[in-house]
Length: 273
Image (cartoon, rainbow, N blue to C red; front, top):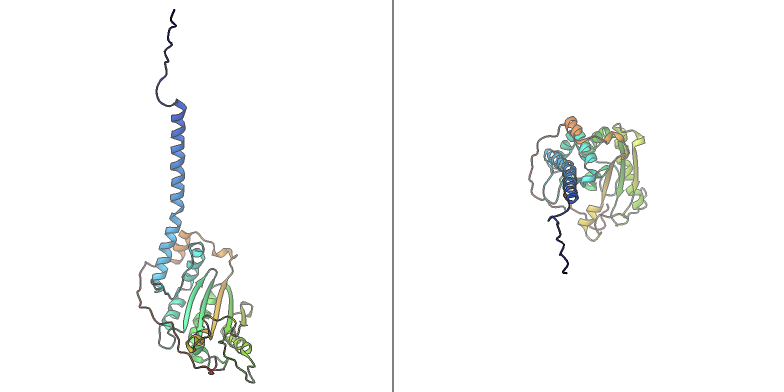
């Protein structure tokens, strides 16, 4: 007797639990996508805020700029610092655009610091360490910025590789150190506390460019001033919304400028420092 074939009564499609599991995974995926999208808003707001401040200070949008800005990870500190000293920065930038100081003063923003580079031709006479009175307005604006920012002014003196041997300066070490000390004394005389000042002379050991021409040597003869901010200072921590409300960043405006030459008029070899 032929066996009766059993019929399989199986419904088509996935099991019921699979549908519930798929819905759950879809909801979780949507949830995490929303979290990622929310986290990117802060960076966009940072870009908008710094764009407004850059426009207000007349920062260039081309490759070369008067103030070079740091990556997003340091942006909160940077834009707050720049907003606090905005009037002084504008006055300093106006001085930098005059014929006397053009291409001789540069500002660079670093993480936890603002760096001011002053070429020696506006600071000192050849082979001397006495400040020229004409540079006092530039140094005064830097001092005003330092008064508003709780930090330390570190001053570095630099020379080129041409040797010097005088009664006052037996070598470039003494010359670079005395030039840094002269700048330090100016800041001390205008009211910067001594505890916030330091200086060092590097002679020709840290050139910006190779000492292969009079122009390059002129670039290497300089004084660098670092306004260093205490990175552990909790006063710098502030939500972006509160920061914008407190400092009221202006609307973005872009100021275009043509690129200028970076070269400085150098002295001939044998003409010191």
